[in-house]
Amino acid sequence: MKKYIWALLPLVMLGACKKDFENLNTNPKLFPTVPAPTLITQAERQLSNALTSASVNNNVFRLVEQQWQETTYNDESLYNFDTRNINRQMWGSLFRDVLNNLKLAKDIIPGDPTVVGDAVKKNDIAIADILQVYSFYYLVTTFGDVPYSQALDAKNNFPKYDDAATIYKDLLKRLDADVAALSGTASLGSADIIYGGDVAKWKKFANSFKLKMGMTIADYDAALAKTTVQAALDAGVFTDNADNATLVYLAATPNTNPIWVDLVQSGRNDFVACATLVKQLNNSNGILDPRASKYFTLYKATANDPGVYLGADPGVKANYESFSHVGAVVTAATAPGLLLDYAEVSFYLAEAKAKNLITNGDAASSYYEKGVQASFDYWKAGSATAFIAANPYTANNLATQKWVANFNRGWDAWIETRRLDFPVLYKPATGAFSDFPVRFKYPVDEANVNPANYKAASAAIGGDVVTTRLFFDKNVMPK
Image (cartoon, rainbow, N blue to C red; front, side):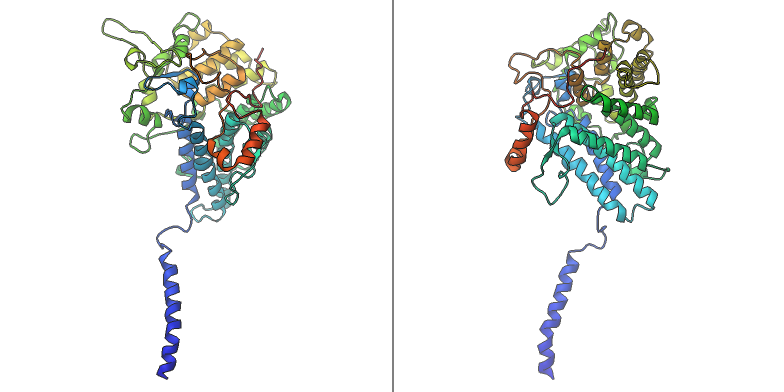
């Protein structure tokens, strides 16, 4: 009998050991999956950081748009984007940190015990998808053809690149479906650090972004632009700055505005005002633009001398002490990240009216005036009445004032400058690496890791160079 018991003992012990090892791999105090709302929170934060950052490693559009100029280095002002692999940082932050988190959230939401109720789940998925559409917009308008249909498939390490115009049209369809899916009031709540889970505001944001997307392709596909813009206006777009899509940063790290991190916490003095923008602010048809005091500091201001706004020439390495600096409003730790605002929407409506893309609403000049005043209000620059009288509505003034209002939103300013080919930015200093960049090259990782699809995409768009115009960039100004 004893021999029988001992014969069974190894089998019993083996079974016990197997069970114990399985338990060691499971932490009973952790969720089996990450709660979906936290993934959306992180995606929103990373998205805002990507658009807001002033780091030359992540976001160089203020330099490209000649809003700021460099002091310590001047590579990026001369369109050298390869040394720091800037395109890889932009590509990675949107694909990895934003789009992938949002996909995971959408996959988790149906079975997430922290998201209670079918209505909430439906709204949360729609909001996550709106944020994906927003993110893909920047990828397509920056690079052209990009991975899309296979981009977020974890099992596919070599995704194909989809045609940019085809992606764009699908994004518009997704946006319509998301707006239709939003209902009631229940959603993410405080996990949404843009609108606090306000479903009505997300609807208005989606319609306003649809307007933006429609105007972006106005010179590429006027018919689609017309139906898109008219539908957006009819459904309800931003009507004042209270509708703005902003992410509120906090005073304590690590949740401060990334500009504060780059310019204040770092203790570095890498940027000054650029002469291109400062000249426009100093002489806007004979008057000083009141927003200058919000954008920049005065140079050599003393008790006896008010000083001047002075900018460094684009592309020329500047002495930090010799020019105006970025204003305290911009560098504050709690300065909000801005994803879309009422001024931008008003300017789009002005252009839409001028191009006969909308049949109702105000006159183009009225929308233009609303846009200028909205920008003044946002920057707390007072009444814009006198400024508008000196700078009335014209096609050129519309493009210029949109560029000025897009101060500190360099990525958006760059999209509009390429689309409208106005204002005409000064050529950078001798030694620029290229003509004005109208796209960013694909990351070198794509050429190394996904070479076949990279080569096909490069050929399809006309060459993987910064001077290849993308599908929407047709060089047609409004009348």
